Length: 30
Image (cartoon, rainbow, N blue to C red):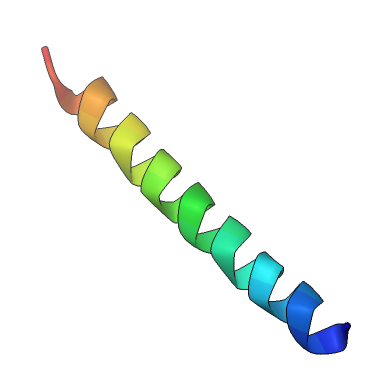
């Protein structure tokens, strides 16, 4: 269970990172 929660946490962090990066790319566009 501990391993599964750690895995899901890593996936969530990756999704957040890609989401934030895409937001920055969109906001940098004119």
